[in-house]
Image (cartoon, rainbow, N blue to C red; front, side):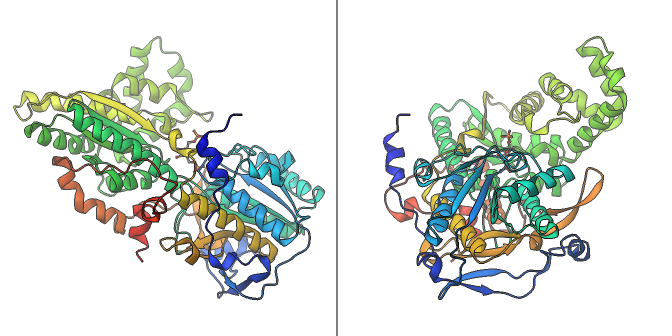
Length: 552
Ligand code: FBP
């Protein structure tokens, strides 16, 4: 493979690490906090996790360490969607292990958690790691979305841990994968398997965060990549002055990515799903918000603009949520009748009648492409695949209809021409920013330190991230501390609570303070491309979200 100049240069980049980790395993002392509790449902969680529940928060300090310096066998798994920096977590873990004992072995389980279940692994040696340092992607071992949930899958995981004589497994994943890590840690304790399980907080979505996890890795690089593209589009829009750009941004559920990009780029409109749900806004209300900006700008001679749309939006719009639930129920109960309809027109009429009321009317009001997506594009359980619906095109179509009505009423006299975009995969495997390269390396090294000090059921944690890396605080947080019980597929399950955008949080407040002006004026901000070499103020600056949530 021919290497680009940047890739070659990034191989030589040495991640900055917290001073507490820089003395090596022998100089890492462990400080323990008091007993911890889960965020809710304490009794239920205590009884589900008798071995792991209530453990103390761990903070590493510079001092006389008692880390296990024996040879360790450690397995690592990349789980779920790609996020920039995953390779550096593995590099940090590898370097910690090698510093502890050069004979230690790091095994990479291939293709996500299934690799553990199927015992499909490769040895990750120094030469292999060297090829992936500071690069994006998860291709070193691949990733996957398998959940370890059946008794057979747990039994096979135990068998792999025993046959490989694993001392630990590190799961690099989001809220679901780390919930799985907690269950695995508890299962190993119950079965007498001497193998720790340590999680690492990953997801570009930014929704795995709490008092001890300031951000999940990958959010920094992914949002900076999208913000660069949005800034470029803003400049194009302001130059050509003829298009409204509707940009959907990845983020399966929470709107953190859209909000961060709005703070970076100051578009004319940015929708925040959590606000829309809290205000009980309908699809018509959302359309009205966009049209208000279009009409106001047209009145000033500006028939161009930029709208940001979070990927998860429609599941937060109450009337759309009811429509989707109705469609799922209807398909489950009357699939045969639906399939017997002779053509698209008959299928539409059948659905409208079957749904009835407001949902039937909303369904009929949707553009034909969206109606087709809703009924044809279904997951293996027969449910609507919400993340595949082209919300950006749906909103363009709704806006066109509304603008025509406003024009007929003499309330709008502009010209509307649109472009639709979806940014997601463009950001998930970018070269990690300096922040993510440093943060991930420290998370990996911390995971090693947790293993070497005998902890299990913990999430590697690196805090104080708005300070320079040398001042970061490393340690671990018990996974049970972040958990509550939630209804999943008809029964109550222990899960790590997803962090949605908080409407009383500093990032949303900062956005809310600026948006009225951005909606009417052209206040675009151009973040430019991620910079890897140059002044720290440019190259190492974390996200606006992080800086607002954790001011120095
Ligand atoms: P994770 O939560 O597993 O990190 O994945 C996040 C994500 O990138 C979402 O933003 C997106 O909705 C989803 O993955 C897409 O998944 P896929 O690549 O399987 O289509």
